Each structure stands twice: as structure tokens, then as C-alpha cells.
Image (cartoon, rainbow, N blue to C red; front, side, top):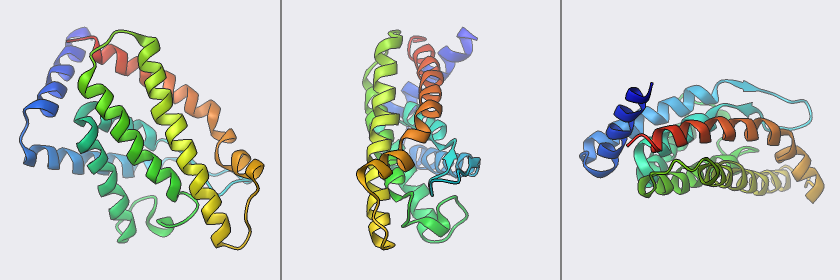
Length: 193
């Protein structure tokens, strides 16, 4: 397993530092497809217009593999594909209740990608903090802002408490579990240099 992680990390470092633009564009498109596929795995909750999905796994994998700029491009490709009607989870809802979360995905990819570009660490706590900030704080804040704006646009503005109850609280446990799993994987990869 250590050998596989070391090979992946070597490939990741090559992609970030030495790969050509065309290779990075192709990988950005592939990760955009991965984000679209994982976005299809979702659970709807009766009390919120925002579903639970697994897209954060693909967003974080993109950030770890491509670094900040190109993982941001990957998420942007995913968002643009949905807005022009290509099959993705956002096609019918590109400008709706989940718009803020999509913005959060892009910012999460950028922040986490920049961190992984410059840091090889075996410090699980540090990796967990960066991942929690990237995945939970950034995505949740962007998501709640977008959810509030959406509620205004439909003529039924949510209160501050409603925004938290519909846009963040139901997802904290699942997102915390995802962050722990992802930070474990990220730490294992980054320390195998």
C-alpha cells in the first residue's frame, strides 16, 4: 500500500509541477466528470431543498491531484456544463438552492489545492484542520449564503435560523465523517514522498 501511495504522490507532484497544459486540461475535464458522477449519488431530505451528495470526495481528490488552479478549473468546468444543460446534477438547478454550494466547491478546490501544492506533511491534525476549513466552513458558508439568496428569489425568505437548519446543520455529521476520511487519505498520500 505504501508503494502505491508513493507512486500516486510522485505522479501528483509531477502533474502539479511539470505536466504540460494539455495534460492538465484533460485531467481537469476528467475530474469534472468525476464530480458530476459523484453528484448523482444523493439523498433528498424532506425539510431542505439541498440534497446530501458525495461530490466533495471528487472535489477534494481533484484538489489533491491537480493543485489549486487546475482543480478550480475542474469545478468550473463542472458548473459550466450544468449551466449549459449537459447532464450533471446541477442542470435543472444551476441557479437555485444549491448555487452557493457550487461556489463553495470551487473555493474549496482552490484553497485545498493550494495547500497540497506546497505542503508535504504527515501531521494528521494539520491536514484535518485544513480539510475541515476547506470542505465544511467554506462550502457551508457559501451554501448558506446562496440558499438565503435563493429563498429571497422565490419570495419566501428564510430566517437566519432557517438557513442554518436547512443549509448546514443536517450536513455537519456526514461532512465531518467525510472530512476525517479524506484527511486520513490526504495525510497518508502527502507523507509518502
